[in-house]
Image 1 (spheres, rainbow, N blue to C red):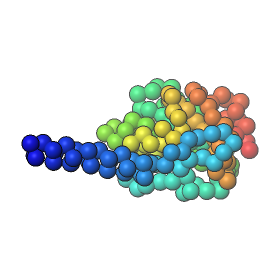
Image 2 (cartoon, helix red, strand yellow):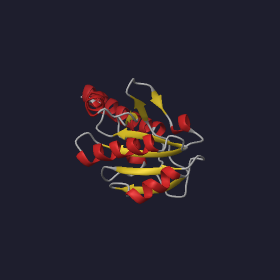
Image 3 (cartoon, rainbow, N blue to C red):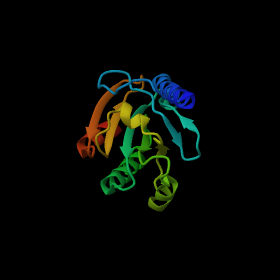
Length: 166
C-alpha cells in the first residue's frame, strides 16, 4: 500500500517536472506579420545550433520544407537559381527542414545538390512558433528581424523578382 502511494506521488512529481521544464524551455512565441520574428530552434547539418541572429542585418527568406514534398525541392532549386542570378543582394535563405531528428536530411541535400543554408527543426519547435500548416511555407524577415510576408505554398515568381532585385 505504501509502495503504491509512493509510486503515485513519484509519477505525479515527474509529470509536474516535465510540464514545468517544457514551460521554461520553450518560449510561447508565434510568428505575426509586422512583428519581430520568433527565433528558430534549429541545428545545421553538422549539429551546431543556429539562430536568426546569425544572419542579423540581412533580409532572410525562412523556407520550411520537407524532403517528401516534391514542390518543396523545386522551390529550393528556384531559390538557388535566384541567388545565383542576383549575387549582390542582401538576402539570405534558410532552408528549414521539418522532417524531425530521425530524417537523413544530409543524404537528400547531397542527392539533390542543394546549396542553400539547410537547417533542421529537429523537435518541430520552429514549425510550432511559425504556426506551420504545410510545406512549402516561407517567411520574409527584414534586417531588423520583423516579419514582412508569409507565403503558404510556392512564392510567386513576381514576388521573388521583387525580393531579389531589392
